[in-house]
Length: 398
Image (tube, rainbow, N blue to C red; front, side, top):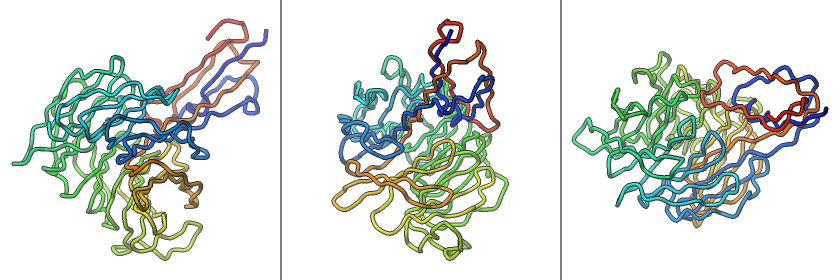
Protein backbone atom coordinates (compact mmCIF):
# COMPACT_ATOMS: atom_id res chain seq x y z
CA UNK A 1 0.00 0.00 0.00
CA UNK A 2 1.36 3.40 -0.90
CA UNK A 3 1.72 5.77 1.98
CA UNK A 4 2.77 9.33 2.60
CA UNK A 5 4.89 11.02 5.23
CA UNK A 6 5.57 14.70 5.70
CA UNK A 7 9.09 15.17 6.99
CA UNK A 8 10.63 18.50 7.99
CA UNK A 9 13.81 17.61 6.14
CA UNK A 10 15.08 21.15 5.80
CA UNK A 11 14.52 21.85 9.48
CA UNK A 12 16.19 18.57 10.43
CA UNK A 13 19.16 19.21 8.19
CA UNK A 14 19.55 22.74 9.46
CA UNK A 15 19.38 21.45 13.01
CA UNK A 16 22.16 18.98 12.29
CA UNK A 17 20.32 15.72 11.68
CA UNK A 18 21.05 13.06 9.10
CA UNK A 19 17.94 11.15 8.06
CA UNK A 20 18.72 7.62 6.91
CA UNK A 21 16.95 4.41 5.85
CA UNK A 22 14.85 6.19 3.23
CA UNK A 23 14.29 3.60 0.51
CA UNK A 24 14.53 5.96 -2.45
CA UNK A 25 15.78 9.44 -3.22
CA UNK A 26 12.92 11.69 -2.19
CA UNK A 27 14.58 14.98 -3.07
CA UNK A 28 12.56 15.29 -6.27
CA UNK A 29 9.36 15.06 -4.27
CA UNK A 30 10.22 17.91 -1.94
CA UNK A 31 8.35 21.18 -1.64
CA UNK A 32 9.58 24.04 0.49
CA UNK A 33 8.01 26.34 2.99
CA UNK A 34 10.43 29.22 3.33
CA UNK A 35 12.00 30.35 6.56
CA UNK A 36 10.40 33.42 8.09
CA UNK A 37 12.30 36.50 9.23
CA UNK A 38 10.67 38.39 12.10
CA UNK A 39 11.68 42.02 12.62
CA UNK A 40 11.03 44.06 15.76
CA UNK A 41 10.12 47.56 14.53
CA UNK A 42 10.79 49.57 17.67
CA UNK A 43 9.39 52.91 16.51
CA UNK A 44 6.60 51.26 14.53
CA UNK A 45 5.16 49.30 17.47
CA UNK A 46 5.02 46.27 15.19
CA UNK A 47 6.69 43.13 13.92
CA UNK A 48 7.35 42.52 10.22
CA UNK A 49 7.11 38.91 9.02
CA UNK A 50 9.09 38.30 5.80
CA UNK A 51 9.70 35.17 3.77
CA UNK A 52 13.32 34.13 4.07
CA UNK A 53 13.92 33.49 0.36
CA UNK A 54 12.42 36.61 -1.21
CA UNK A 55 11.86 38.87 1.85
CA UNK A 56 8.31 39.41 0.68
CA UNK A 57 5.72 40.05 3.41
CA UNK A 58 4.40 36.80 4.85
CA UNK A 59 1.74 38.89 6.58
CA UNK A 60 0.90 42.52 7.15
CA UNK A 61 2.95 44.10 9.94
CA UNK A 62 1.75 42.71 13.28
CA UNK A 63 0.69 45.25 15.91
CA UNK A 64 2.46 44.45 19.18
CA UNK A 65 0.46 46.91 21.33
CA UNK A 66 3.84 47.90 22.72
CA UNK A 67 7.26 49.19 21.73
CA UNK A 68 9.27 46.10 20.74
CA UNK A 69 12.94 46.27 21.67
CA UNK A 70 13.77 42.63 20.88
CA UNK A 71 12.19 39.58 19.25
CA UNK A 72 12.64 35.81 19.66
CA UNK A 73 11.15 32.76 17.92
CA UNK A 74 10.42 29.53 19.76
CA UNK A 75 12.50 26.54 18.58
CA UNK A 76 9.34 24.56 17.83
CA UNK A 77 8.33 27.18 15.27
CA UNK A 78 4.95 27.89 16.85
CA UNK A 79 5.42 31.23 18.62
CA UNK A 80 7.22 34.56 18.32
CA UNK A 81 7.68 36.88 21.30
CA UNK A 82 8.64 40.53 21.60
CA UNK A 83 10.17 42.30 24.58
CA UNK A 84 8.38 45.63 24.79
CA UNK A 85 9.57 48.80 26.48
CA UNK A 86 6.04 49.22 27.84
CA UNK A 87 6.37 46.65 30.66
CA UNK A 88 4.98 43.82 28.55
CA UNK A 89 5.58 40.83 26.29
CA UNK A 90 3.69 40.24 23.05
CA UNK A 91 2.91 36.68 21.92
CA UNK A 92 2.46 35.99 18.19
CA UNK A 93 1.22 32.82 16.50
CA UNK A 94 4.08 31.92 14.13
CA UNK A 95 1.76 29.78 11.97
CA UNK A 96 -0.88 32.43 11.27
CA UNK A 97 1.30 35.45 12.09
CA UNK A 98 -1.47 36.91 14.20
CA UNK A 99 -0.99 38.49 17.62
CA UNK A 100 -2.32 36.26 20.39
CA UNK A 101 -1.92 38.55 23.39
CA UNK A 102 0.17 41.25 25.03
CA UNK A 103 0.83 40.68 28.73
CA UNK A 104 2.20 43.09 31.34
CA UNK A 105 5.01 41.35 33.24
CA UNK A 106 6.70 44.15 35.22
CA UNK A 107 4.81 47.35 35.99
CA UNK A 108 6.45 50.67 35.01
CA UNK A 109 9.44 48.83 33.60
CA UNK A 110 11.21 48.32 30.28
CA UNK A 111 11.44 44.76 28.97
CA UNK A 112 14.65 44.92 26.99
CA UNK A 113 15.39 41.41 25.73
CA UNK A 114 14.10 37.87 25.83
CA UNK A 115 15.01 34.29 24.92
CA UNK A 116 12.98 31.10 24.59
CA UNK A 117 14.07 27.85 26.25
CA UNK A 118 15.21 25.05 23.90
CA UNK A 119 12.05 23.05 24.62
CA UNK A 120 9.90 26.14 23.87
CA UNK A 121 8.15 25.91 27.25
CA UNK A 122 9.54 29.05 28.90
CA UNK A 123 10.43 32.61 27.95
CA UNK A 124 13.04 34.50 29.97
CA UNK A 125 12.98 38.30 29.70
CA UNK A 126 15.10 41.08 31.18
CA UNK A 127 13.35 43.80 33.20
CA UNK A 128 15.72 46.75 33.04
CA UNK A 129 14.57 48.86 36.00
CA UNK A 130 13.38 45.92 38.07
CA UNK A 131 16.91 44.49 37.82
CA UNK A 132 15.53 41.02 37.26
CA UNK A 133 14.81 38.20 34.85
CA UNK A 134 11.10 37.56 34.28
CA UNK A 135 10.07 33.91 33.83
CA UNK A 136 7.11 33.59 31.45
CA UNK A 137 5.20 30.35 30.92
CA UNK A 138 4.61 29.72 27.21
CA UNK A 139 1.64 27.42 27.75
CA UNK A 140 -0.41 29.86 29.82
CA UNK A 141 1.14 33.17 28.68
CA UNK A 142 1.64 34.27 32.27
CA UNK A 143 4.54 35.38 34.44
CA UNK A 144 5.41 32.55 36.82
CA UNK A 145 8.60 33.73 38.52
CA UNK A 146 11.14 36.53 38.91
CA UNK A 147 14.90 36.08 39.29
CA UNK A 148 16.45 39.18 40.93
CA UNK A 149 20.01 40.13 39.97
CA UNK A 150 22.52 40.97 42.67
CA UNK A 151 24.55 44.01 41.67
CA UNK A 152 28.31 43.72 41.89
CA UNK A 153 28.80 47.49 41.90
CA UNK A 154 27.16 50.55 43.40
CA UNK A 155 24.82 50.70 40.39
CA UNK A 156 21.69 48.69 39.68
CA UNK A 157 22.45 46.02 37.05
CA UNK A 158 19.82 47.30 34.58
CA UNK A 159 19.86 44.11 32.46
CA UNK A 160 19.48 44.68 28.74
CA UNK A 161 20.50 41.41 27.06
CA UNK A 162 19.97 37.71 27.75
CA UNK A 163 20.75 34.34 26.18
CA UNK A 164 20.44 30.69 27.19
CA UNK A 165 22.75 27.68 26.90
CA UNK A 166 21.77 25.16 24.19
CA UNK A 167 20.86 22.59 26.85
CA UNK A 168 18.58 25.09 28.58
CA UNK A 169 20.42 24.82 31.90
CA UNK A 170 21.89 28.32 32.27
CA UNK A 171 21.03 31.91 31.51
CA UNK A 172 23.57 34.63 30.72
CA UNK A 173 22.46 38.18 31.47
CA UNK A 174 24.20 41.45 30.64
CA UNK A 175 23.87 44.29 33.15
CA UNK A 176 24.85 47.44 31.28
CA UNK A 177 24.72 49.82 34.23
CA UNK A 178 27.20 47.87 36.36
CA UNK A 179 29.05 46.50 33.28
CA UNK A 180 28.76 42.87 34.32
CA UNK A 181 27.57 39.54 33.01
CA UNK A 182 25.67 37.12 35.25
CA UNK A 183 25.34 33.35 34.95
CA UNK A 184 22.09 32.01 36.43
CA UNK A 185 20.61 28.55 36.67
CA UNK A 186 17.52 28.60 34.47
CA UNK A 187 15.44 26.37 36.72
CA UNK A 188 15.52 28.57 39.83
CA UNK A 189 17.62 31.69 39.11
CA UNK A 190 20.47 30.70 41.41
CA UNK A 191 23.52 32.78 40.55
CA UNK A 192 26.57 30.75 39.59
CA UNK A 193 29.02 33.41 38.49
CA UNK A 194 29.58 37.09 37.74
CA UNK A 195 32.18 38.84 35.63
CA UNK A 196 32.90 42.50 34.94
CA UNK A 197 32.90 43.48 31.27
CA UNK A 198 33.96 46.59 29.39
CA UNK A 199 31.85 49.70 29.72
CA UNK A 200 29.78 50.18 26.61
CA UNK A 201 29.07 46.45 26.18
CA UNK A 202 25.54 46.18 24.79
CA UNK A 203 24.91 42.63 23.55
CA UNK A 204 25.80 39.01 24.25
CA UNK A 205 25.29 35.63 22.59
CA UNK A 206 26.08 32.02 23.46
CA UNK A 207 27.95 30.13 20.73
CA UNK A 208 26.16 27.37 18.83
CA UNK A 209 28.01 24.66 20.76
CA UNK A 210 27.35 26.37 24.10
CA UNK A 211 31.02 26.61 25.02
CA UNK A 212 31.64 30.33 24.50
CA UNK A 213 29.92 33.58 25.42
CA UNK A 214 30.46 36.47 23.00
CA UNK A 215 30.06 40.08 24.15
CA UNK A 216 30.17 43.16 21.92
CA UNK A 217 29.96 46.92 22.26
CA UNK A 218 32.20 49.93 21.92
CA UNK A 219 35.41 47.95 22.45
CA UNK A 220 36.77 44.78 20.86
CA UNK A 221 34.56 41.68 21.12
CA UNK A 222 35.19 39.56 24.18
CA UNK A 223 35.00 35.76 24.25
CA UNK A 224 34.43 33.99 27.57
CA UNK A 225 34.05 30.34 28.49
CA UNK A 226 30.49 29.63 29.57
CA UNK A 227 31.56 27.21 32.30
CA UNK A 228 33.45 29.77 34.42
CA UNK A 229 33.24 33.13 32.54
CA UNK A 230 37.00 33.21 32.10
CA UNK A 231 38.50 34.26 28.76
CA UNK A 232 38.77 31.58 26.10
CA UNK A 233 42.22 30.34 25.14
CA UNK A 234 43.18 32.25 22.04
CA UNK A 235 44.42 35.59 20.71
CA UNK A 236 43.06 38.77 22.21
CA UNK A 237 40.61 40.22 19.64
CA UNK A 238 41.52 43.64 18.31
CA UNK A 239 39.09 46.53 18.08
CA UNK A 240 37.92 47.08 14.50
CA UNK A 241 34.75 49.02 15.22
CA UNK A 242 31.71 49.12 17.47
CA UNK A 243 29.70 45.91 17.75
CA UNK A 244 25.90 46.18 17.77
CA UNK A 245 24.57 42.62 17.56
CA UNK A 246 25.74 39.03 17.16
CA UNK A 247 24.72 35.98 15.15
CA UNK A 248 26.15 32.49 15.66
CA UNK A 249 26.24 29.41 13.46
CA UNK A 250 28.49 26.36 13.43
CA UNK A 251 31.86 27.26 14.91
CA UNK A 252 31.64 30.97 14.17
CA UNK A 253 30.34 34.24 15.56
CA UNK A 254 29.18 37.04 13.25
CA UNK A 255 29.44 40.51 14.76
CA UNK A 256 27.46 43.35 13.22
CA UNK A 257 29.87 46.30 13.21
CA UNK A 258 28.58 49.86 13.10
CA UNK A 259 31.70 51.27 11.40
CA UNK A 260 34.63 49.12 10.26
CA UNK A 261 38.15 50.30 11.09
CA UNK A 262 41.10 48.77 9.25
CA UNK A 263 43.54 49.66 12.00
CA UNK A 264 44.92 47.04 14.38
CA UNK A 265 45.59 44.46 11.71
CA UNK A 266 42.28 44.12 9.88
CA UNK A 267 42.96 44.26 6.15
CA UNK A 268 40.66 46.52 4.13
CA UNK A 269 42.52 45.96 0.86
CA UNK A 270 42.64 42.16 0.62
CA UNK A 271 41.84 40.57 -2.76
CA UNK A 272 39.18 37.93 -3.27
CA UNK A 273 35.49 37.54 -4.04
CA UNK A 274 34.30 39.32 -0.92
CA UNK A 275 33.95 43.09 -1.01
CA UNK A 276 36.58 44.38 1.42
CA UNK A 277 35.05 46.72 4.01
CA UNK A 278 35.79 50.38 3.58
CA UNK A 279 36.90 52.35 6.61
CA UNK A 280 33.84 53.76 8.34
CA UNK A 281 31.36 51.50 6.53
CA UNK A 282 29.31 48.94 8.47
CA UNK A 283 30.46 45.34 8.24
CA UNK A 284 29.93 41.81 9.47
CA UNK A 285 33.07 40.66 11.27
CA UNK A 286 33.64 36.91 11.47
CA UNK A 287 35.34 35.19 14.41
CA UNK A 288 36.00 31.64 15.56
CA UNK A 289 33.80 31.38 18.63
CA UNK A 290 36.01 28.89 20.47
CA UNK A 291 39.16 31.03 20.38
CA UNK A 292 38.07 34.57 19.45
CA UNK A 293 40.29 34.42 16.36
CA UNK A 294 39.41 37.06 13.78
CA UNK A 295 38.66 35.51 10.37
CA UNK A 296 37.27 38.09 7.97
CA UNK A 297 34.99 41.09 7.48
CA UNK A 298 32.23 41.57 4.93
CA UNK A 299 31.39 45.03 3.63
CA UNK A 300 27.78 46.20 4.01
CA UNK A 301 28.27 49.49 2.19
CA UNK A 302 27.83 53.09 3.22
CA UNK A 303 24.36 54.45 3.71
CA UNK A 304 21.87 53.92 6.48
CA UNK A 305 22.90 52.65 9.91
CA UNK A 306 22.82 48.95 10.65
CA UNK A 307 20.87 47.65 13.66
CA UNK A 308 20.46 43.87 13.98
CA UNK A 309 21.58 40.53 12.56
CA UNK A 310 20.29 36.96 12.44
CA UNK A 311 22.12 33.94 11.02
CA UNK A 312 20.48 30.60 10.15
CA UNK A 313 22.04 27.54 11.78
CA UNK A 314 23.80 26.46 8.58
CA UNK A 315 25.73 29.73 8.42
CA UNK A 316 25.25 30.15 4.67
CA UNK A 317 23.77 33.63 4.82
CA UNK A 318 22.81 36.37 7.24
CA UNK A 319 19.92 38.80 7.48
CA UNK A 320 20.67 42.31 8.71
CA UNK A 321 18.51 45.36 9.31
CA UNK A 322 19.13 49.04 8.66
CA UNK A 323 17.56 52.35 9.60
CA UNK A 324 17.09 54.73 6.70
CA UNK A 325 16.03 58.35 6.50
CA UNK A 326 12.92 59.31 8.45
CA UNK A 327 13.26 56.00 10.35
CA UNK A 328 12.30 53.90 7.32
CA UNK A 329 13.67 50.43 7.96
CA UNK A 330 14.87 47.60 5.74
CA UNK A 331 16.22 44.07 5.89
CA UNK A 332 18.78 42.59 3.49
CA UNK A 333 20.29 39.15 3.03
CA UNK A 334 24.01 38.57 2.46
CA UNK A 335 25.83 35.45 1.30
CA UNK A 336 28.43 34.76 4.00
CA UNK A 337 30.66 32.88 1.56
CA UNK A 338 30.84 35.41 -1.26
CA UNK A 339 29.89 38.59 0.58
CA UNK A 340 27.28 39.36 -2.07
CA UNK A 341 24.25 41.27 -0.77
CA UNK A 342 21.02 39.99 -2.22
CA UNK A 343 17.43 41.11 -1.95
CA UNK A 344 16.41 44.00 0.30
CA UNK A 345 12.92 44.71 1.60
CA UNK A 346 11.30 47.49 3.59
CA UNK A 347 10.17 46.97 7.18
CA UNK A 348 8.58 49.12 9.84
CA UNK A 349 10.30 51.97 11.61
CA UNK A 350 13.65 51.31 13.35
CA UNK A 351 14.00 47.52 12.84
CA UNK A 352 16.22 46.96 15.86
CA UNK A 353 16.36 43.15 16.14
CA UNK A 354 15.62 40.03 14.05
CA UNK A 355 14.58 36.45 14.74
CA UNK A 356 14.28 33.44 12.43
CA UNK A 357 11.74 30.64 12.18
CA UNK A 358 13.35 27.77 10.23
CA UNK A 359 12.09 26.59 6.88
CA UNK A 360 10.03 23.44 6.63
CA UNK A 361 10.51 21.05 3.74
CA UNK A 362 7.70 18.64 2.96
CA UNK A 363 8.67 15.31 1.39
CA UNK A 364 6.15 12.84 -0.01
CA UNK A 365 7.58 9.33 0.07
CA UNK A 366 5.68 6.30 -1.17
CA UNK A 367 8.41 3.92 -0.04
CA UNK A 368 9.15 4.90 3.53
CA UNK A 369 9.92 1.94 5.80
CA UNK A 370 8.32 1.47 9.19
CA UNK A 371 11.53 2.57 10.92
CA UNK A 372 13.33 5.82 10.17
CA UNK A 373 16.73 6.26 11.76
CA UNK A 374 18.30 9.62 12.33
CA UNK A 375 21.35 10.85 14.14
CA UNK A 376 22.54 14.19 15.37
CA UNK A 377 25.68 15.61 13.80
CA UNK A 378 28.55 16.74 15.99
CA UNK A 379 28.09 20.35 17.03
CA UNK A 380 24.35 20.45 16.34
CA UNK A 381 22.42 22.61 18.81
CA UNK A 382 20.70 20.91 21.72
CA UNK A 383 17.30 22.27 20.69
CA UNK A 384 17.42 20.47 17.32
CA UNK A 385 14.04 19.00 16.41
CA UNK A 386 13.05 16.30 13.93
CA UNK A 387 9.34 16.09 13.08
CA UNK A 388 7.34 13.64 11.01
CA UNK A 389 3.67 13.21 10.28
CA UNK A 390 1.46 11.28 7.87
CA UNK A 391 1.32 7.55 7.15
CA UNK A 392 3.79 4.71 6.77
CA UNK A 393 3.63 2.32 3.82
CA UNK A 394 1.72 -0.09 6.07
CA UNK A 395 -1.08 2.45 6.30
CA UNK A 396 -0.51 3.13 9.99
CA UNK A 397 -0.36 6.76 11.11
CA UNK A 398 2.91 8.28 12.25
